[in-house]
Image (cartoon, rainbow, N blue to C red; front, side, top):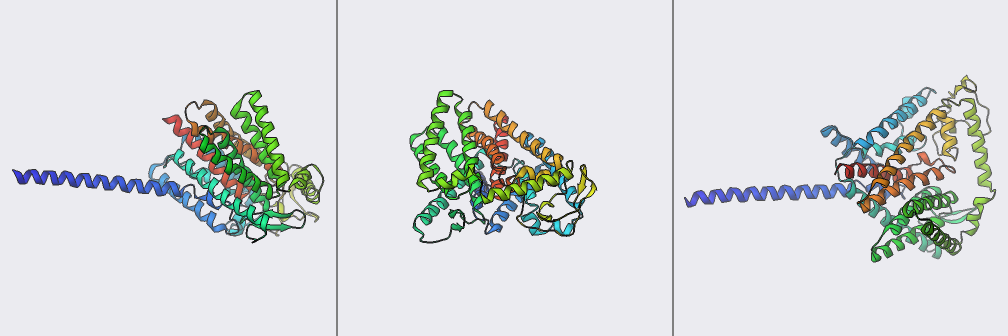
Amino acid sequence: MDIKIRNFNSGKDNLDISYYAKEKSDLLFKTILYLLLPLPALFLLTNNYPYLLILSVILIVSLSFLSFLLNWKITKFHSIILYVLLIIFCYFIISFFITGQGIGTFLSFDFLKYDGNFFFCYILFFAFAVPFFDYKRVSQVYFKYLFGIFAVFGLFGIFEYLTNFTRIVIATDPGAGKMFVALNYAHNATGSVYAVASLFATIFFLTEKRKKIRFYYLFILLVLVVSLFLTKSRGSYVGYIAGTFFAIILHYRNFKKIITRLLILTGALIVIIFATGTYKRFTEIFSATDTSVIRSRLWAHAWQLFVNSPIFGIGFGRFNDIELSSTYKLNGIPGLISVFTGTNIRLDTAHAHNSYFQFLSETGVIGLGLLFLFWGLCFGILIRAFISNKTSYFGKRVYLCGITGIITLFVLAYSENYLSATTIMVCISMIVSLGIGLYWQEAKT
């Protein structure tokens, strides 16, 4: 009898140990998963080493695809925007091939890096639509990564800018002088993503109620905004100011508080502008410069291409194949549907320096209209989430970041082709898609 009892207890102990081991294994897996999914936030300032960001995105897409094969499930709120995004992908691919560009070009790394980086930029919307994780936890880690890495780069950039001790994250431009670029190719790429990160830090600071944590976000905010102005990216200044303006309005919704906060923000920015020595660069926003003259010529060129083919455009990826001052021939019906079928295919960074002109010239009113529809749906979902949220403190922050991030993106898109720029688009794609997933998760529970 004693032996039977011991055997029974021994079996129960083994069962408990097995259950505990499984729980521990699941916890370890989830911990690793939540550290991996926000990983692209760490590589937004390192496009001199593009494989870091590429591999992190491929990892997320692979995990998502595997989970989708196992469960065949996406969130309800993602489904409608993914239908539109699939239509956009198909339309752009058809537009690409109809102009005589081959499959070899389409699959080449240079195409996906330059002319076709749109596909890479938006693929995270598909990845985060598969609910195999906790959206809140991933979002929390995402912001920790973002604020941490941007503050570290920013502090190092400020140190280099002031001391000239090293030249790792600071570059020199003949017109603008020293500028903070981090480990990116261009100061505009760094400036645009710092504009968005600064906006997010502003929102976290404004919405934080705990005094000690509020001081932490104030420190992060000051480092990020100073770094933003040291990028000497004028369009990024405007993007941050516009996004913050709407963030204050949406958060407070009280006229007196809105005016007070806007005045405080204006005063703080004036101090930072003079302290960083970027006053001249800021005033150039309102004056004609060599850069603005070049942009106006590119805009006129893009508009002329659009006029020749307003419905479908001249073909996806074809804008930089036609040199600014060269003669060119379009095939089709001039003024209605014409495409460029020239054999000179250039895969480089050249673009219209304006997303609206870029997509109008290459994909016509249909292409730009589909993009507006996609972003309008994302914006509408996040607005509903923000207004309907009554209990989730963190959720309200995420939704506000997503809403104002989209506004900032569309303001930035006036001066560069940011609607398909890898650095800022990976950042925006992540926060918007995570916000939509978080809304679905909170609505479900």
